[in-house]
Structures are given as structure tokens and as C-alpha cells.
Image 1 (tube, one colour):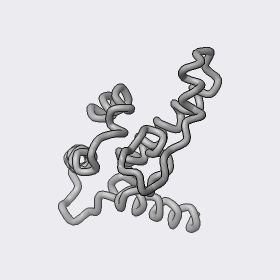
Image 2 (cartoon, one colour; image 1 turned 45 degrees about the horizontal axis):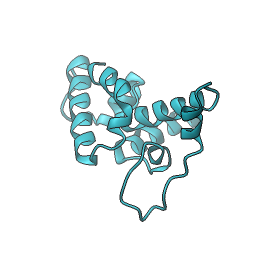
Image 3 (spheres, rainbow, N blue to C red; image 1 turned 120 degrees about the vertical axis):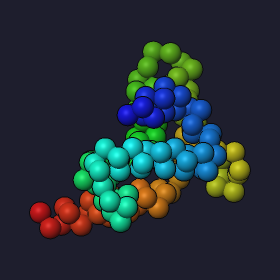
Image 4 (cartoon, rainbow, N blue to C red; image 1 turned 45 degrees about the vertical axis):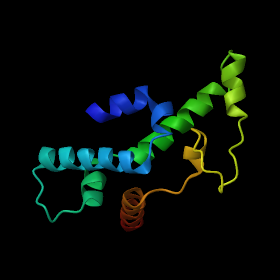
Length: 124
């Protein structure tokens, strides 16, 4: 939860962060989850996230960005409404903008948690 408040406050900045920096933050979140649940080293991080119903940092950032752009579309400020109309550059472009976060593929941990949730939904 410590990381999440900073990520929410500075989400436009973290949308430009290097993947390695985000991966390091994910490692810290995984360690907090492991200590909080007193899980053994052999328990996968995806299992911890599924059981705690805690999204990964990349999924959380994607959701936060989506909420921001949904709210900005109906905001009275014209500059915020213009941010919604922003079209991301082609995928070969190397600059990541906050809107590109919504269209990027999920990382491996997020994909693993999503597949575990899908498996659980089909068995229920």
C-alpha cells in the first residue's frame, strides 16, 4: 500500500518510467506480500497476488490511467478534455506517453495472475 499511494499520486511520471524501475517496484511489492502472508519461498508471486486479490503494479497503473482518461473526458477544463483526444504514436516510436500505457501488452506476472483468475472463474 505504501507504493500504491506514490504510484497514484505520480502516475503520469511512472508512465514514463523505465520498465526496469517498474520491475524493481514490483519486486518490492512481492516481498511485502510474501512477508505479510508468511508464505514460503516456493509459492509463486502470481498465486500470492491472486489469493490477496491484489493487482500487479502494471495492472494498477493501467487501471488508474483508464480511470483518469474516463474522468478527463467529462471535465470542464478544455486542456484535460484535449488529453483524451490524444492519439498515441505508432508502436515503432520509442517515446512512451501516458496514453500508451493503456495499449501496451501486460507483463508476465500480470498475465499469469489473469490466467489464474480465468481458471478459477471457469471452475466456479
